[in-house]
Image 1: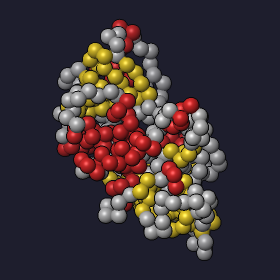
Image 2 (image 1 turned 30 degrees about the vertical axis):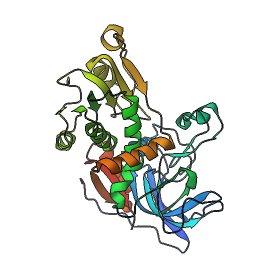
Image 3 (image 1 turned 180 degrees about the horizontal axis):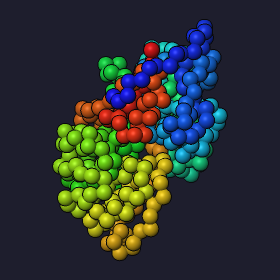
Image 4 (image 1 turned 135 degrees about the vertical axis):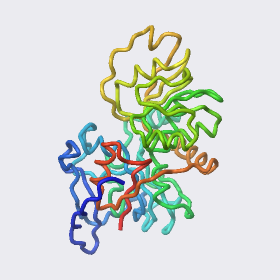
Length: 350
């Protein structure tokens, strides 16, 4: 982990309060958009659980929120949506969790349940969807409230830091893999190799795919090869063979035509990020002809989450983490912005 800086002094603890970080003034990470806060301890309402946070993964979406790439939905929100915690209290009408259970909080926090998307099993497209760390305070804190119906039961015998990245990086990577329409035994290209990518790659490899990783980070290329990738090259390089499918995890629009040009006939590129820089013009003949497909990925459904967590347990997925104390949350985001994180960054309170 790069840059061991002096830790800021924590605000004075008071009875009935919890500490954490909030997005005070969105802007470049070098401008210090996060502010350390201490607030009254949250109380779970009907259908909600209160968890003591054991670990919270640091997602690129948190960076986009801090830097203002995603407009804030409310002022001074606590980010973080890869939450592993112990239930310390439950609200009325909660039946799936009891005090002492381990629970996971993810990005998708709520949907209307009644729109045509929800009724069709596509709740990720619900116009009324709500998100942890964007519409409500998240896990960059000592405690968090989660809607019980959108939380995941988690095993007691796993390290919290290694579970946390599964709850967004893993779930979103899994949905992106499915959106890429990878055929059995197919050839998959992965552009960018951070938290989501290193988990999605393992699912693809377990299913018999050949995986080619394209990323600017030499450390990430080394990790990819160690996990079993067939090749690992520079981000803009040509993979050694045409691709049946590709996933763009890097938030770099310039890579869209690069990845499209690497696809074989009828291949599919899935763009996994919630934010992407502008995409250059595509040439129909070079990028889209021969029935090549370009798809986006929007959030996930709870069914995606459950299916991925079962798959991760079945294949024995390896989660590479870089742990940071909660007190160094700004440093974790800065390291993520500079591609200094090995695998997934995870904040540990206490």
